[in-house]
Amino acid sequence: MTTEQTYVIVGAGLAGAKAAQSLREEGFDGRITVVGAETERPYERPPLSKGYLLGKEEQAKVYVHDEAWYREHSVELISGSQVTDLDRGSRRLELDGGGQLGYDRLLLATGASPRRLDVPGADLEGVHYLRSLGDSQRLREAIKGGGRVVVVGAGWIGLETAAAAREYGCEVTVVEPRPVPLQAALGPEMGGFFADLHRAHGVDLRLGRQVTGLIGDGHVRAVATDDGQEVAADVVVVGVGVRPNAELAVLSGLPVDNGVLVDASLRTEDPDVYAAGDVANAFNPLYGTRVRVEHWANALNGGLAAGKAMLGQEVVYDRPPYFFSDQYDVGMEFSGWFEPGGYDSLVVRGDREEKAFYAFWLDGGRVVAGMHVNLWDDGIGPVQNLIRAGVPVDAERLADPDVALEDLAKS
Ligand SMILES: Cc1cc2nc3c(=O)[nH]c(=O)nc-3n(C[C@H](O)[C@H](O)[C@H](O)COP(=O)(O)OP(=O)(O)OC[C@H]3O[C@@H](n4cnc5c(N)ncnc54)[C@H](O)[C@@H]3O)c2cc1C
Image 1 (tube, protein in one colour):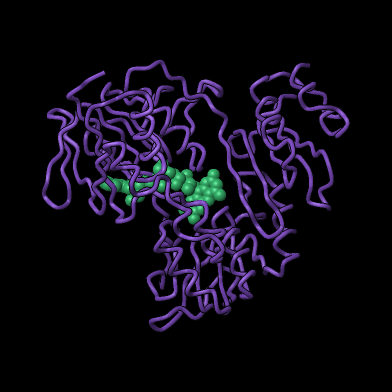
Image 2 (tube, helix red, strand yellow):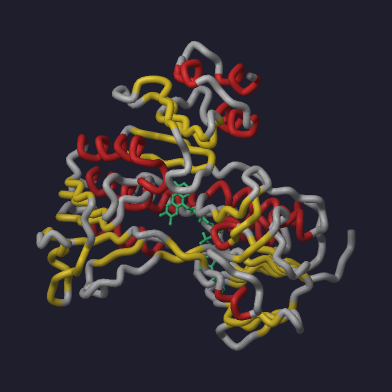
């Protein structure tokens, strides 16, 4: 294939880098330009709240491709440049430095940004968010010597940060408005597992509590909660979720609703504009609805799929969402999807006390999601097979470690 076409990818994160890789692997030999607002070349974010934050994983390991890869694959990377406008009529993008870029096909891989805490004192020094390499470096400097850390929000980022801060010897308090950590993602039972885990490691969990303000004079010194308490803090880490960076789609009149709306081939209603990764709210045929996924594997696989789709290949992106996390001595993988509270039973197979088990979320007798904790021999593959099989399973057999999960997928 020899083409004069220019494919532009906005957003130099994992999804953008994987889309560029996919375009080249699939034989596209036109021009590929990746524009990214950050000064770093594309990198993976999971280590930023785990090994990299703990100083155990070196920076060189976080990048998606080494520096030479871009040159060797003729992928033009424009770093430190924000795309400020998209005109679909003339197929042009505007860059913050005043430059313009034309495209024949475009991928929006602009990811997501942390939601800001909207309380008095939120802009005091010592208040951290965690999204970029720089954020992780600054947070590491702030917690590596110990001290009092208050984490706002008991989602994945908040809990992983709490675990890292405990490992550095900090006193850690987590403030969360819901009754258990990770309630929306896992529900109360498995949220309770993570509550026990953190308590066992000395974290003070303030559940069912809202932060009403941050107190300090220049630098934060305490966090006020809605029960009238003040929790002393040298460092505050805010992990209250992210919002998709969908501004360019909005500006250009593309449909946006909790992210850029795309079909199962990751295409917007404009046949030349695609979206992948955290910013995309994609129709997933496995669920018959749109699902916006904020996880590493979705950026990786969605980026690869978008590259193919941009080349006109038949693409049906129907993977069950997948997520992993490491906290203390717990490594886990989760796969599947349900609306918050959208399951009617939970089945555990294995030993919860020993932190070695599977958990399955069922709806109408069918497995809609599953997780393993520290069971790496079989991992998450059998869980995904059960989800895809979509067959009713017997709860007693599902709980019985002597019954092969593969057999249940056939039932
Ligand atoms: C600290 C941390 C830990 C995580 N840990 C896990 C984990 O353990 N497991 C897991 O599954 N997931 C994890 N995630 C989530 C995972 O990293 C994200 O799902 C993934 O990074 C999404 O990739 P993306 O390429 O879609 O977006 P991003 O990584 O957000 O990249 C998008 C890029 O686009 C740039 N950009 C945005 N707008 C513009 C514009 N207008 N012009 C130019 N550039 C622009 C942004 O600056 C950014 O660099 C973690 C995330 C964080 C922050």
